[in-house]
Length: 160
Image (cartoon, rainbow, N blue to C red):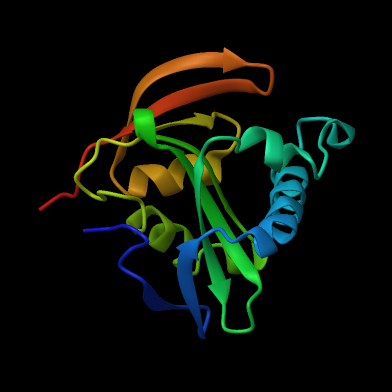
Protein backbone atom coordinates (compact mmCIF):
# COMPACT_ATOMS: atom_id res chain seq x y z
CA UNK A 1 0.00 0.00 0.00
CA UNK A 2 1.08 3.54 -0.68
CA UNK A 3 1.37 6.53 1.53
CA UNK A 4 4.14 8.74 2.83
CA UNK A 5 4.09 6.94 6.15
CA UNK A 6 5.90 4.20 4.26
CA UNK A 7 9.02 6.32 3.79
CA UNK A 8 11.13 4.95 1.00
CA UNK A 9 14.23 5.78 -0.97
CA UNK A 10 13.77 5.37 -4.71
CA UNK A 11 15.92 5.92 -7.80
CA UNK A 12 15.38 8.38 -10.64
CA UNK A 13 17.67 9.17 -13.51
CA UNK A 14 20.57 7.40 -11.84
CA UNK A 15 20.20 9.14 -8.48
CA UNK A 16 18.49 8.38 -5.20
CA UNK A 17 15.52 10.38 -3.97
CA UNK A 18 13.08 10.30 -1.08
CA UNK A 19 9.33 10.83 -0.99
CA UNK A 20 7.95 12.64 2.04
CA UNK A 21 5.34 15.12 3.24
CA UNK A 22 5.98 18.73 2.24
CA UNK A 23 8.04 20.60 4.84
CA UNK A 24 7.65 24.34 5.33
CA UNK A 25 11.30 24.77 4.33
CA UNK A 26 10.50 23.36 0.85
CA UNK A 27 7.43 25.47 0.07
CA UNK A 28 9.32 28.16 -1.82
CA UNK A 29 11.14 25.62 -4.02
CA UNK A 30 7.90 23.74 -4.71
CA UNK A 31 6.19 27.02 -5.63
CA UNK A 32 9.03 27.80 -8.06
CA UNK A 33 8.83 24.31 -9.61
CA UNK A 34 5.05 24.70 -10.00
CA UNK A 35 5.52 28.03 -11.74
CA UNK A 36 8.33 26.84 -14.04
CA UNK A 37 6.64 23.63 -15.16
CA UNK A 38 3.35 25.42 -15.84
CA UNK A 39 5.10 28.02 -18.00
CA UNK A 40 6.99 25.30 -19.91
CA UNK A 41 3.99 22.98 -20.33
CA UNK A 42 0.96 25.23 -20.78
CA UNK A 43 2.32 27.06 -23.79
CA UNK A 44 -1.17 27.88 -25.07
CA UNK A 45 -1.74 30.14 -22.04
CA UNK A 46 -0.32 33.60 -21.40
CA UNK A 47 2.64 33.03 -19.04
CA UNK A 48 2.09 36.42 -17.43
CA UNK A 49 -1.03 34.94 -15.80
CA UNK A 50 1.17 32.59 -13.74
CA UNK A 51 2.77 33.67 -10.49
CA UNK A 52 5.01 31.94 -7.97
CA UNK A 53 2.40 32.72 -5.31
CA UNK A 54 -0.13 30.52 -7.13
CA UNK A 55 1.07 27.38 -5.37
CA UNK A 56 0.02 28.59 -1.91
CA UNK A 57 -3.41 29.55 -3.21
CA UNK A 58 -3.93 26.43 -5.35
CA UNK A 59 -2.81 23.94 -2.69
CA UNK A 60 -4.60 25.45 0.32
CA UNK A 61 -6.09 22.68 2.45
CA UNK A 62 -4.46 19.90 0.43
CA UNK A 63 -1.97 17.24 1.45
CA UNK A 64 1.27 17.74 -0.50
CA UNK A 65 3.89 15.03 -0.98
CA UNK A 66 7.30 15.80 -2.48
CA UNK A 67 10.09 13.80 -4.09
CA UNK A 68 13.52 15.16 -3.12
CA UNK A 69 16.93 14.28 -4.49
CA UNK A 70 19.84 13.24 -2.31
CA UNK A 71 21.02 16.85 -2.17
CA UNK A 72 17.59 17.96 -0.93
CA UNK A 73 16.32 19.60 -4.11
CA UNK A 74 12.69 19.03 -5.03
CA UNK A 75 12.14 16.81 -8.08
CA UNK A 76 8.36 16.88 -8.04
CA UNK A 77 5.21 16.97 -5.95
CA UNK A 78 1.64 15.77 -5.83
CA UNK A 79 -1.22 17.47 -3.98
CA UNK A 80 -4.44 15.75 -3.05
CA UNK A 81 -7.73 16.84 -1.54
CA UNK A 82 -8.18 13.90 0.84
CA UNK A 83 -11.89 14.38 1.56
CA UNK A 84 -12.67 13.62 -2.08
CA UNK A 85 -9.66 11.50 -3.18
CA UNK A 86 -9.00 14.22 -5.75
CA UNK A 87 -5.51 14.67 -7.16
CA UNK A 88 -5.31 18.38 -7.77
CA UNK A 89 -1.72 18.70 -8.98
CA UNK A 90 1.15 16.44 -9.97
CA UNK A 91 4.23 18.27 -11.26
CA UNK A 92 7.71 16.93 -11.96
CA UNK A 93 10.76 19.05 -12.74
CA UNK A 94 11.41 18.89 -16.50
CA UNK A 95 14.82 17.25 -16.03
CA UNK A 96 13.19 14.44 -13.99
CA UNK A 97 10.19 13.77 -16.23
CA UNK A 98 10.12 10.20 -17.53
CA UNK A 99 12.39 8.96 -14.73
CA UNK A 100 9.75 7.35 -12.49
CA UNK A 101 9.31 10.25 -10.07
CA UNK A 102 5.69 10.86 -11.11
CA UNK A 103 4.80 7.19 -10.72
CA UNK A 104 6.43 7.08 -7.28
CA UNK A 105 4.47 10.17 -6.21
CA UNK A 106 1.23 8.42 -7.20
CA UNK A 107 2.28 5.35 -5.20
CA UNK A 108 2.89 7.59 -2.17
CA UNK A 109 -0.74 8.71 -2.07
CA UNK A 110 -2.59 7.54 1.05
CA UNK A 111 -4.35 4.26 0.40
CA UNK A 112 -2.82 3.76 -3.06
CA UNK A 113 -3.85 1.70 -4.98
CA UNK A 114 -7.07 1.01 -3.05
CA UNK A 115 -8.66 4.45 -3.36
CA UNK A 116 -10.39 5.47 -6.57
CA UNK A 117 -8.45 8.69 -7.00
CA UNK A 118 -9.81 11.22 -9.49
CA UNK A 119 -8.27 14.14 -11.34
CA UNK A 120 -8.77 16.58 -14.18
CA UNK A 121 -6.22 16.76 -16.99
CA UNK A 122 -6.14 19.45 -19.65
CA UNK A 123 -6.72 17.93 -23.09
CA UNK A 124 -3.83 19.92 -24.57
CA UNK A 125 -1.47 18.41 -21.99
CA UNK A 126 -1.11 15.20 -23.99
CA UNK A 127 1.99 14.00 -22.14
CA UNK A 128 0.20 14.15 -18.78
CA UNK A 129 -2.86 12.43 -20.23
CA UNK A 130 -0.69 9.60 -21.57
CA UNK A 131 1.07 9.32 -18.20
CA UNK A 132 -2.18 8.96 -16.28
CA UNK A 133 -3.62 6.48 -18.79
CA UNK A 134 -0.48 4.35 -18.54
CA UNK A 135 -0.88 4.30 -14.75
CA UNK A 136 -4.44 2.98 -14.70
CA UNK A 137 -6.58 6.11 -15.01
CA UNK A 138 -9.58 6.11 -17.35
CA UNK A 139 -11.52 9.02 -18.80
CA UNK A 140 -14.85 9.34 -16.99
CA UNK A 141 -15.98 12.79 -18.05
CA UNK A 142 -15.18 16.01 -19.88
CA UNK A 143 -15.42 19.71 -19.19
CA UNK A 144 -14.08 23.17 -19.92
CA UNK A 145 -12.18 25.50 -17.59
CA UNK A 146 -10.50 28.88 -18.00
CA UNK A 147 -7.34 26.95 -18.99
CA UNK A 148 -9.09 24.95 -21.72
CA UNK A 149 -10.87 21.65 -22.24
CA UNK A 150 -10.12 18.89 -19.76
CA UNK A 151 -10.92 15.25 -19.18
CA UNK A 152 -11.95 13.88 -15.82
CA UNK A 153 -10.04 10.70 -15.06
CA UNK A 154 -10.57 8.06 -12.38
CA UNK A 155 -8.05 5.50 -11.18
CA UNK A 156 -9.40 2.10 -12.14
CA UNK A 157 -7.02 0.14 -9.93
CA UNK A 158 -3.98 -1.89 -10.78
CA UNK A 159 -4.38 -4.40 -13.56
CA UNK A 160 -3.53 -8.05 -13.15
